[in-house]
Image (cartoon, rainbow, N blue to C red; front, side, top):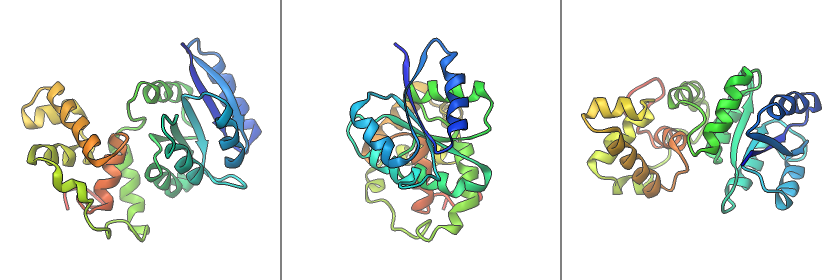
Length: 224
């Protein structure tokens, strides 16, 4: 079955370019397009979509609020934020709103396609280390960042789960965490799954965001 993709961007030329790239793939299909967030929400009510490529700066309703509304629905499609270097602060807000990751608008086609497939399969779209670089840069500029009380559910984590969470937040892959803690990758994956469930998070990217918001990880590197 093809991956059903929706393109949300107010620039028709960009949507056309993405559509041409995706249409050439045997496992992907562009099933819907929208020029702003309001239109996107309307279209999604009548169209089954697996992955949404979401611009951030659009008229009527921006991509961050649109992402928040989409991700609040049950069985929501995965959302990839499309950003440029000068709009990364919006990507941060998009991750907080529930997006599974972000991509630069000038990303090479092969990386975009790989990201869509990864998100569709349930993986985070961007490496946590990439997300950390984003947060290192912008978290000090956000009033709430690092000043909120610790997430109340973090206290329910076992010592091992908290240890795994810290390593996820520092950008390590399951394999790297397994080597660091002398565990099997399967065991690490189980711990990550339990962490997501206990904290009510969608994926590893949101673990990184939460770690910054609660001060578990400081901008620039290590544990808080």
